[in-house]
Image (cartoon, rainbow, N blue to C red; front, side, top):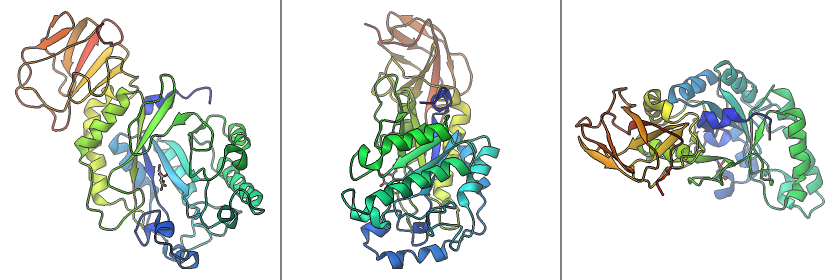
Amino acid sequence: MPADASWFNEAKFGMVIHWGIYSVPAHAEWMLHDEKIPFEEYRRYADQFAPDDWDPRDWVNLAQEAGMRYMVLTARHHDGYCLYDSDLSDFTAPKTAARRDLIAEYIEAARAGGMRVGLYYSLLDWHHPGWQAGPESDEWPEFIEYVHGQVRELCTNYGPLDVMWFDGGGPGCAACWRAEKLAKMIRELQPDCLINNRGLLPGDFDTPEQKIEASEAGRMWESCLVVGHRWGFYRNEQYYKPPTRLLLDLVHIAGGGGNLLLNVSPMADGTIPEPQQEILCEMGKWLARHGEAIYGAQRCKYGSHGTFVNGGATARGNTLYLHMLLWPGQQWAFSELGNTVQNARLLTTGEKLEFVQEGDRVIFPALPKEPPDPHLSVIALELDGEPRRSE
Ligand code: GLC
C-alpha cells in the first residue's frame, strides 16, 4: 500500500472507460468470446478503429462536469488489443489504423485537468496462444513474460500512475501468474500507485462489480457500476439507469466509506453516447450542490443504507447528512440517533432548519413543503461527535 492513499478516500467518484476495437461493431467488449468470431476476422476491426477526431479533453471535461475525481481507461481488455504502444505486440493502436498512442494522450489530458489517473489492464488475453494453452502448458511461461513486460511498459513509459486496475486474473493461481513478482515490480516503478484486488492478490482495495458491498472497516473499496447495461459500447442501447438511481447508489457507497467507479462506453470515434453524457452531467449538477456530503465521506456509523432515512445517510467528521429520496413535506422526524444535534441546515439550499430533539428522536416541524431537489434533498446535522446509533 502506498504511504498516502488519502486521495482515494477523498475522491469517492471516478470514471472507468471501456474503449477498444470492439467499439466498431458495437456489441460490447465480450463479442470476440461470446459470438465466437474467428480471431482473424475480429482483428480487422483494428483496421477500422481510427478515432482521428478524438480529443481526450472531452472526456476529462465530462468527468469534471460530473464531479468525478479520477479516471481509469482500458489500456488492454480481454481481446488483447492495446490502446498504447507496446513493443511486445503488434495488436496495438499505434501499429494499426489508429496510429496513435491513445493511452499517452489520455494520461496527458487527464493530468492537465487535475484528474487522478488509472489504467485498466486485463491479465487474460484471449488472442495469446499461451493464454489459450493454459497454465499447465509449455507456452504459459512466455505468456507470463509478455504480461509482466506489458505492465512494465505501462509503469515505465507514462509518468506517475495513481491506479493499476487489473481484471481477468484467471485461470490459475497467484503462483502461476507470478503475481507477487508483478506487484513488487509495480511498487518499485510506481510507489504511489494503488493496485486493485484483481491481480490474484488482495491488493489495496476491493472492487465489488455491479453491486454495492462494503468491505470490513479499514479496508478501501470501490464499486464499479455501469450506467446502462454493458461496459463496452453496444449500439442502440436502450436501457439507462435514471440519475436518481445512480445518485442513490453513490450515497449508499459513500455512506459505507467506498468509492463509485462509474463506467462510460465511448463509440469507436471516441464520442461518449449522448444519454450517458446527460446522466453524468445531471449527477454533476447534484454534486455541485451536495458534494460536501460525498467527498471525503467516511463510513457512517449511524448506518448508511436502510437507515431511518429514506435515501440513506453519509458522514464526515461530526456532520451527518440525511439524503431524502422521499420528501416528507413540512413535518418529519427520524430516530435512533445516538448524538446531540447542535444545528441543522438544508444543504440543498443552505438555509437553517428548525429542529427539536427528544432523546434519540429528532423532529423537524417546518421543512419546505416541496422537495428542494429533484433527486435527493440533503439535511446536514452538526453533532456533538461522530454520528452513531443510540443504544
Ligand atoms: C468484468 C467483465 C469485463 C469488465 C469488468 C469491469 O470482469 O468481464 O468486461 O471490464 O467486468 O469490472
